[in-house]
Image 1 (spheres, rainbow, N blue to C red):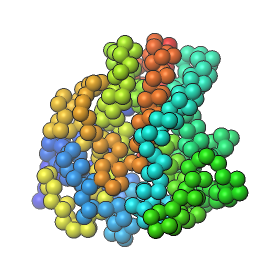
Image 2: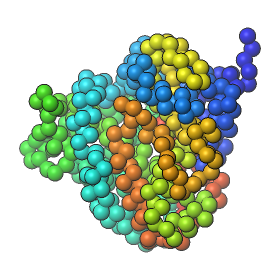
Image 3: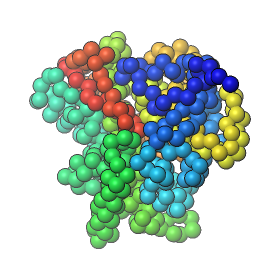
Length: 406
């Protein structure tokens, strides 16, 4: 049977024509093919979900799991990883620790209250980075001067990593997240190097504990009294690096770009700082690539969704970014409303695998935005918005640079 234009198998991820605009495929797929066959960079096929109701349901339905992605019939994201990114050494170790147990132990650190206590330090570091950027002079790249170094500083501080080693963390993060740039051998080597570094850091902290997350996790235990294993501590460091560095850096860059793309948005925030919190949430909803590749799930049996039936044995890609633009779920979905409330977006996922570090990301974004509005109320893009480019091949598709002036 011939396929309709909407049902044809497409190459995923889609490449938008402009960095801040959504791919034109989304609207067509939401309307005509909500469970769309796609080919991943590995060459494997999966089903792409683009409607809000379907994506949210798939993220919380226990018949659709991440653990199933280790099965031999599950689709892989990259050809360089024969077992798939979700069966990496980090993922296997955290699964062995027990997902719920791990989240309980680590989640005690990632509370909104604890992140709020860290906010003054984030603001102080952002102020110092803005000092350096203004000394450099306009135009300056917001990514290299602020969006990249701040999350590195924060995550290294939380883990107790010496600041001199942050370039190592950047290199490892790039390797772990890039879908096309590195070979299987290079990725495996990065995993080994990272594990060796973290093992040395953990040994140092056992000898001289500090007030950091790793030191606290060494002494923490679950209700059964078992401490986290050393392999679990190493994997935790890697998981937090990915969640707390590259993704947050990308969010900072796109947040600023979106707010400056229409100067009325920026000027409204300069005039009313009380909008910082809802503005951050709206950017998280609005950005077409903020959620990156999306979340993968494996269907252990047939699962019926509003948009169709997922057959057992299929791998699905939950596009939170596409869902966040679903006209069925949002009034005026294609417009940015800085005061939008409520705003139950899916940028951080949903259900048991939702992003553990979301309080950290939200706090950093609010801290950075507050500092920029205070320090540089005249901030503007130094290039036309159509000239901004994303770094393709990354799971998080960050902006390559954001040239600004003030």
